[in-house]
Image (cartoon, rainbow, N blue to C red; front, side, top):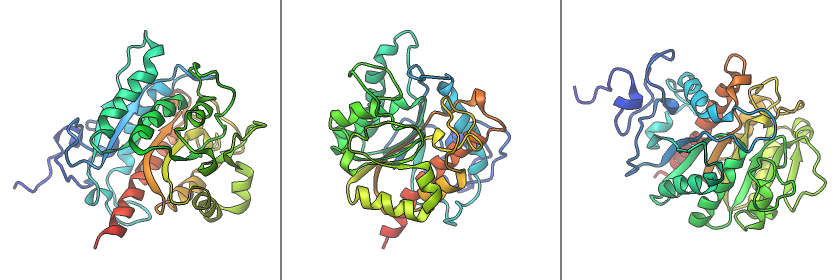
Length: 320
């Protein structure tokens, strides 16, 4: 029967329009959410890709292995209708796994150009990107590519750190690249917000900063309202550093900071953002060597899944 989905290994044997389908979560070829691997983006809404780069980290390395770990953990999220929406996002969106951005490890100084070219090739087809890092520096070349396509954007930034420390315009540094992005006009700091911050930076550089204690005090619904107030109708790029979560929920990261958000808080906030004009996403800083029971990778995979569900919800709302 031609309508019968293939028996397993959907990463390679899936077809366009492939819904979620029960495949054994403990085996089979791995892709993100069992989406088919493809570089053909004709008719594709979202391309998922990994950027296995961690040469800009300031503490523990290992985030280069993040995309692989997130794909493996995503098999747990790939078979049932999406919670709490109750739909299969792939009934509404065509999503493929584009594979990873390829680096020559001996030429780290080429990383910005390589990542930009990777993103440009996808964005040129009017396909949105869901990207898995890698350390947080990878967001900078992604923002450069997205700004060429969309113009200056609002940034919704989940993190323990502001990533706006001093930058000389030449550093490979996962703690300063957002200041560079702001100075280059890639993002509008007055329409951007940072959520979950719990390290001290005396200068906000114009960003709205909402700390982790503030999130704990006001709750997810108020956080969603504040995000909507700050970004308004502007186009939004969303970046989620997994160390936004408390180390109890995400130990597998390079720069863990106690006192962060719970996975439940973060997901509840993300699930309320379907009203934003979302043009791109990334999830970064998963370092599986420090993980326990895959809880960090599973949190990142669920964040990625729910970001796709936001786009599917928007598509559903706009359907006649």
